[in-house]
Image (tube, rainbow, N blue to C red; front, side, top):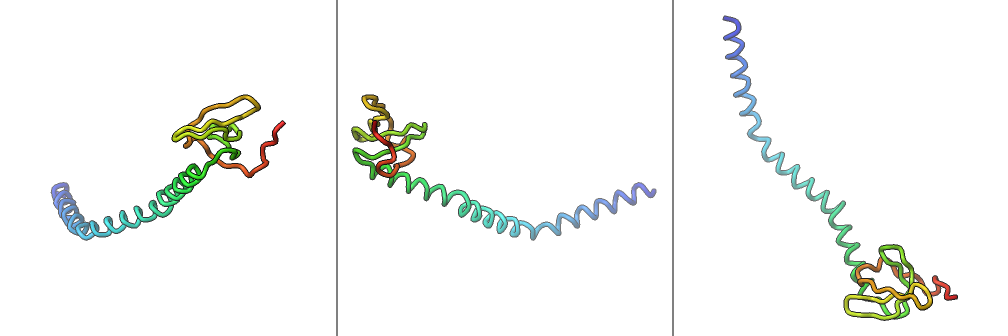
Amino acid sequence: MSVFTSAVFLQGAAAGGSAGQAGGGMGFIIMMVVLFGLMYFMMIRPQMKRQKEHRAMVAALGKGDEVVTNGGLAGRIAEMGESFVTVEVAEGVQIKVQRAAIAQVLPKGTLKSS
């Protein structure tokens, strides 16, 4: 008989435990909103800021600027197109890259011509 009695007590405890969890839903929603807010300020917002700065840098490119591409090639801009830029990496050696592939604009005089 003791086995049946303990089973009844366990069923009552499980039913009471689920009734106590009904108020936890609001706490879960608040926690999710706070977590999303933290992710926005720690990850999404800085990434958007970097993208905006990169777009401004690419828009300000001009002929003669010394640049570094995403692949690590450094050179001087020889020609500008709407979506492509021709970069002279050595005397007489020119490559064509997408404007978005420019990673950095170097200060004037960084690349020494030979």
